[in-house]
Length: 534
Image (cartoon, rainbow, N blue to C red; front, side, top):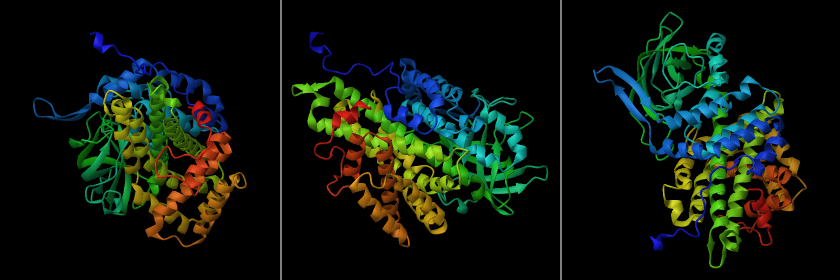
């Protein structure tokens, strides 16, 4: 029809090298000792930017997982069916080591390379990143049992993917079932009971309110043993090939994260194996929690990158009021501000990833203890607002499910909720400062590397030091976490980003004239120089 000619619309954003197009990510990978991974990351960038992968991301989120609790004869199945698009996505991520490559080859920059791979896949399809992240984080918990490590670790390190529940597989993914309906984040309120079976295993009975990726091959589970709250490895298929008792009650109807199934599950005399000692469950999973919290930061940064990429694509192709949108000053300021947020989150995530490498010293370990918590708090909370602003850049199209930003908007809140919501994380920051003073010293040593570069930052850093010198107050936990996170991000930007981006970030986030919404940048900021990196 002649009235339906399509003009002034952006072309499809497909067949793009998502790694090469993201200069902050490319620079950060090289800066943090992972330049040896550039070739593989370029390959990933081309793969996730390809038309077929993009289409699979759409399908995996529209053809959502389906629970088959029983077969037609009434036998329990407890299987979740995923669309083939989901299997193709996660198979690609596993093949490139987005799950456990940092463990299989723990050289300097290994966690940086793995973080970049994880972000590239999560940028396009975030739901599959949940089991990928949990498998990565399960490795240090598994180390509490040499026997279980010997039998399971080779499977976790494998780059093969088999989505079936079967015995004798050479690969495995690990999920988690920690929280219960009466406790949530307060896992010490758990009531699931573990009884020693006398044959090297335990029998678990109880109900888990949230269990993600229920088709995983094994799960880390917290339960009350005679010695107290303990951590267990619970396989879905037992050594004799029979199915373990794993009664899926229902799938959660989540706001976002649609491609990934989460469920409620009932254990009834379910076999599991103790990791570490009885009563030491929380201590056993502590490193695991740090890894998944870091992945929440990385996942949010990946989402911010997708939002920036989609918004920039539109404003660089669409015209209004006589000029390209990107050249309209008000719009330029908005997308440049979104790009600054994305760059700061990316660099922060990569810096933290480097601090998780095997070669780091005690100071780096102390730094990551505090910095991971403050970054998880702040970066993840910035995600939803960031996605919304990008959605607005697309106008009405941004509110349509055909476009990726709407899916991202529904996805971002989960990064702030999972692995410790805002108050839990902020109070953990207070706990680290109070009980582990070495974390404060390490954190200040890191952020002080930018001391003297920018007067606005210097003044802000001085106030941060004063706040840390006082006894932390739980009622002010969020204020403290926010200040520490912004101090860290500003320091990272000043050290590793071009001057135009660093100065604009510092003045707009730390300066006295800062605004409350995106698009309020200092007068005279070089907006196009900021955008050229994105």
